[in-house]
Image 1: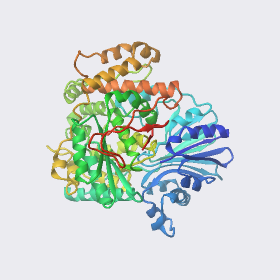
Image 2: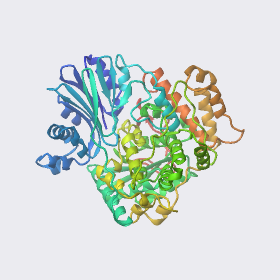
Image 3: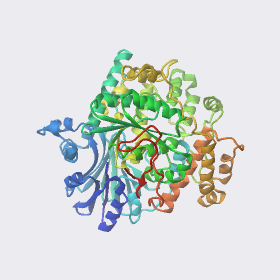
Image 4: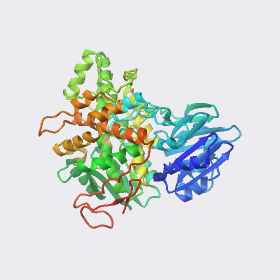
Length: 624
């Protein structure tokens, strides 16, 4: 984990240093240098990595999981001994020898800035799944970039103005809009893409498209191929780490990653992390069973409703967008605990989606199999995926049936355009679903936002599906094997066979028992009094006060329903984001986050059993 930043154009050294200071949570050491006239690069990270890049033409952040393969491709001697310190040099030589398209050879997460002096052009690139963040903006006659956009807000000429259309998407879907940020004029480098910047001109190039082609064979053969690719990817990701962490969210995908970690790191210490409300939390009970099954040291982190007041501002500051939903709060709390024990955390987030295991994929499958319902089911898919209300009578009826009448419509933000309907499902023969999955992966995988929750705490977060060979293996599974008839997630379950017990494979994950109880509803109401009061809503001017008042209306003594909680949560995050990035130009929260607490019976390394407190520093890290 580290950070990049820089300016193409005239720049004051103090200005560049100020941008780097905004990224101090991503790396202790920093250096700025100028490889050419009016081009200024900066990097934060470990000193040994910084030293190797200083004064060179490339600033590189990330980890190349297949560095041995790249070294052999370049005919480097001692390829088997290639280590992280060589990544920047390998990538520079790869691009210099074979062009920017050769980045498709890389597995892992990375962001880079590469200066071509003779042609006076700056190249920015990002890994194929967009796990390593990278943003850019144009400020007058200058082009600037940074791993997190809070660093751009300290530069002269970069204003903090909301992009209302992108903010509408974030509010409706709880995830970022592909190609946009919620700040006007600041854009992400797209996953699997490169930006070429010259003075007065920029252009983009996609170096990876992701091929889709259904392979033939039996279900067991497909499952075996994906399983082998998964284990090979994880083996590369854990190489060089003495201890390995795994995030357990309670689903089958995270359990599979935990079992895979035990396979590829057989003789190493495995730590698993989960978050919940307490002993009665069903998710914590399930994750504890998963950890026990793989012989891991488990850490169950408690997130109480009263913690949200001081936790959420830090979470939003790290995420930089009002996204993530309730799961992000638990993930952030668990990441703070993980930073005490490991430097690498593996995540299953995204694996389920790559294999067609999300509820909306069943809607798409129905549309592919029943052409006469394709139109209205497309509207339902769009409602589930992006929050776009169905337009047709049939679409509204099917949407009501899907949500069982409990869907709460997202607010329409003032000044924002209505979301455009889905362009349409892929057409043609099998694999239509795999093509849909490829489109999602090439857009902006929503899990990429989670990287910064870990990176800001000194952790590398890695997901197996960042590996190109695993992506190809998963997309080659025929659609008929991804969506079962009467069985949920058939191919994922088949992959798990032999790695997880039948009880874990067949068990249906359940949400936390206490997530939406009265305590949580009361805590949301207290936050709403501070953040969503009628006066605050009118002053912000983003949402109609009448919508907020109706959303916060509930019978005395009864909790909010899950769908209403989702909308309240989104409005709270939106206001916190506005206060941080619009009002304070991305400055860190003034108050520390809550202490980290673990569940009784889940001791942490070097401590006694039971709950314990941690002392946070100015970035939200916790000192063990």
